[in-house]
Image 1 (tube, rainbow, N blue to C red):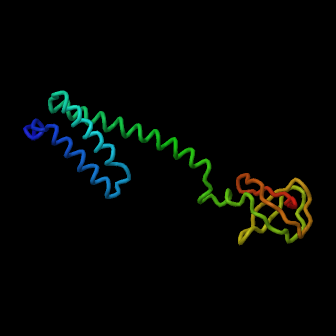
Image 2 (cartoon, helix red, strand yellow):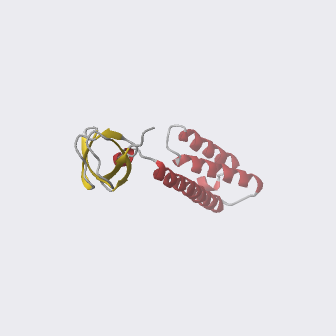
Image 3 (cartoon, one colour):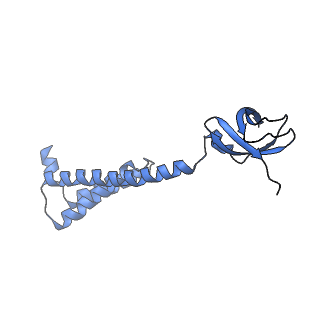
Length: 152
């Protein structure tokens, strides 16, 4: 096994990098991309600097960890920004802006409201008579806050 590792040269690293990049095309979600690029980097370094097999594999490991960590930082920040702006699978957030006509008088404070096929706990800062078009302005936990929809 050691003799196999000692025989690694530039072309082996470039071939390994290309094989890993080709395998990435099968849909591994980026896992092999950074390994493939790291192998290509080691091949490029080995082209200019003669390194022992231990240093080659150590360099490969360091590049793999570093490139994967950089990608994780980039993607993690992007995911957090995306989470703040998304409303997919957050039903309560999707309610903001929806309108409905009240079936009964809505008292000042808290009450119940029919939105679509679900009854929600709702609160209002004013008495609203039945038949009024109301709009959901925000969601506080599981309580929707409504107000009379302004005529446009």
